[in-house]
Image (tube, rainbow over the protein chains, first blue to last red):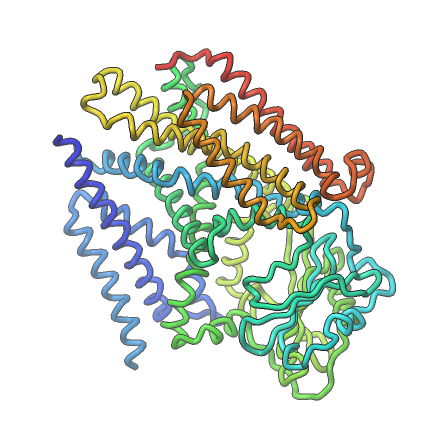
Length: 94
Length: 527
């Protein structure tokens, strides 16, 4: 019984980590277009966040799911996401 | 035990079970889609249209006139003129905005209209019946036979699932150099499967990591990320994003319209040894008219794409164009390398063959993972008399999925080939629908076989059917294409036909050999 409830708890944590990491990765990709240099052709700030999206998603998800100190991991990811979210919002406001 | 390694192991197992169905469909069809050009040449052997590049006296402007006949000038603002190897010359006419298109095909030799279709660009599939086979496997790989956006998200999730499996598998098994050369233990089936799973997974790790990263990017970029980027960086204007990506072309205003044939001739001269691929006309007969000629340079160890931009009024050469933007950039280079890595064209034929083999290896890893799960469940049931573990329903479901994938996929591939051949021959039949029905019905049949018989018998039945099916596909192709096996094999221009026929026969023989081995029984003990 204990093993089944442990598995259920871990599965919920895994789903929460994967879903939050997905949303966070999209916000980070969108926010990165604000601070990355556009390069000579004016496309680098769009291309590199897009290419990095899968790595950001899996990175966040694994950190959130496997961290020995989950609170610290969630706080770190939330701060990074909020910072990029603010960059996105600032761009709309300016 | 609730440490990170245990959690990674659980995540690996859950993802593997969840991903099994969609993931293996994507990996298997991806391995086939790597050779879609060869498959297209094989299935289209009966209609070999000459390349316009090698036709003396061919006039592209005359072909354009025939294709555009009766179309208003507004419908000719964006035009793409494309010729795939062996295909007729295809003109796609679009207005300055919108998704409505008219697609017309012209025979390059007689300069006569072959076909004409009108509708939404995303829904138009003006392919001759014979050439729908390669398209089917591409659609299966990119969209899983679903509607466009839903399909992209599904394949993106499959790609991300593979990424989870690669990362968790790597962190759980911690690959070491000695593990790459460790001989699998053959004493017990469970050990043999586990060792092979780890060994093949370790050897194909760079491939699976690259394919998972690039596949997730390619699927999600189009379905989810580009609209978000357009919203944030381009105030929601996706057209502006496309303009920046394509690069704007500065052209002096004029009423003149450039001739197309001299533009293509000039492009071929500037990139000798390259094959003509496509001409894109933008703002045609309008301010800023320009033409971009795309060519591909093939060699054994590389495949290089070139794009040359011309003034649409004077026909003067303007510049070579990078993949995106107007000038070379790190972003453009990164995108080119990403695309070459995913499609296996980085080192030409060498990487294509390697990618095809590694794609099949990834399927083996997925199938062996399911078998390991089944074996473990059987062992636990045996030891605990089915009390402490999940009931047999879960392992029965996994067994059905395993048979549907390990035995059903090869069988469904062969049946798809036969459905294509039959639909090409039957008047009024639609090959894409016949292939979809044939493919899905075969997977369902294999699943049913897995449900009613034991694993060994189910694999013997499905692999035997697949083995004979692949042989039948080789024999049925002449019926669909009108070109016999001997005739195709003796024609030097149909070299890829020999390769595809040989590959099909090798697949068939491998399936029959595997069925015979399973029927005789494995030397490894069941537990």
